Image (cartoon, rainbow, N blue to C red; front, side, top):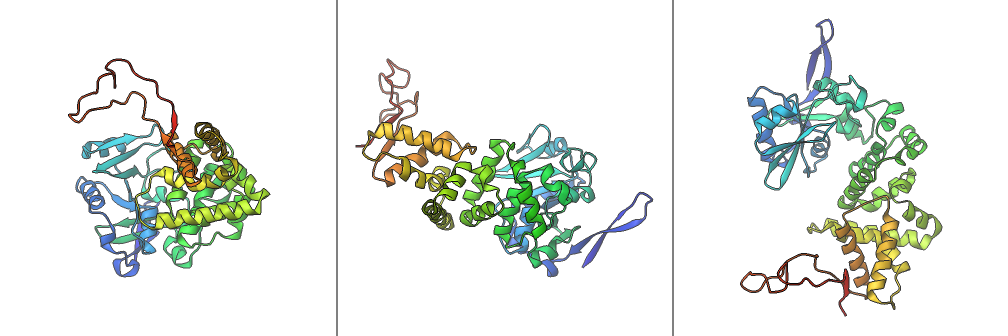
Length: 383
């Protein structure tokens, strides 16, 4: 085990972090994408520090291959953009760089300081950046070239002891960003780390802080839950800490009022998790179907006119999942899927303005802008 030192205000060397070597952390090198290593190598060759950070390091330490690898560096976004042609700067306040390798995106951020607290956007050093991380298990840095884990906050021990420990003071962590409560529940389920009682009490007490969070952020977090393969356990955890009512208030109301609905809702989530575990490439709409299937069974008039049934069910499902706001096409797919499963197939209309072509690839007369365009009904019954 090595020690990382940094100078204090008077220039004296102060112990800052523990460094775990390859023999101590046992991270499989093959779990790290070669493109991520290329990015770090290129930054290093141009005189900058760079490491893998956050959830990817956590997953590597518990033996999981990370789905996404985030990189942090002391190079500022404009400089990173100049070094990588296959990149773009995103964000207005909190600026990051996305580097593209085919369909894969690597997020590269610059170390942040504590000058403006834990949510400011002033660039800083690794020593400061670590103090802005949410939990110790996500506050680890991994150098894939030296194969070393840099640990300022005891995150390695907390992972091994299965404890979810905040880095930011408990009085501030959720006040600064309420979404961290949702993430705490997700991390607990995905890593097996226990949420300490004092943290859980603060989460329950401050759950109302999620009320003003934007629908886009809540949607992003809930979609991650659907993709995780642990939706049932995560939503159970969110219910335990009174958080789910701010993500899906209508579903919470049904769960509280009806044991049958609650049981069916959990069973639907179990089926979703099994589907995700199969490894199939499944569109979001197919996953959303598991959130609404029990409502569809209750509100659909299975003997009604298909178009009217679809219209009414879609409206009810849209209300049911609010404030979640997924792409309309995906929710439409989910509603059609649930109705089809119930014995009422609904065919999606062809997008308006889309051209029809003949066998030779040319537009057919009277279609796609040539001649008169025929109006299409938004939904057609396939009966």
